[in-house]
Image (cartoon, rainbow, N blue to C red):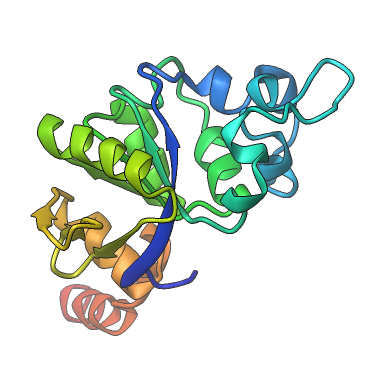
Length: 196
């Protein structure tokens, strides 16, 4: 897995509250058990017409949004279901972080296990970010995971919460199994000492 240390990126603003996982990746795309290709179906019902033609007014279809790795969304992102395909689709598209005032718990946990950083900011910072995006659509933010800071386009840094275990996994580029395997020597030593 790739380590997540710092990330500087322009922002894709999507000012919609209560985006549920069926909007992130519609159920008809959940027949797969791997992540390949899910990014193409991210926000499929908002992104494409019924015949598969991209809707030119949807934010992800605007050429200047290509390659951006930070998604700025409304409140309560990822509600609705426990499907892990939602963070798979977001990372498959290329997002590495999502900024909101709140995330559904299951979505947040699935995101962290799939190298997608959910960044929670307060309401005022959230509103300022959307305003800064309107003033300068090419503005950037920087996320420093070790310091747990989000630096806004105006240079102000704000903190964000993350549990210590998820932070350690992201910084070291390991999942839960990889985290445990890094302690193999200590585990073997413990087992040897207790099974004599």
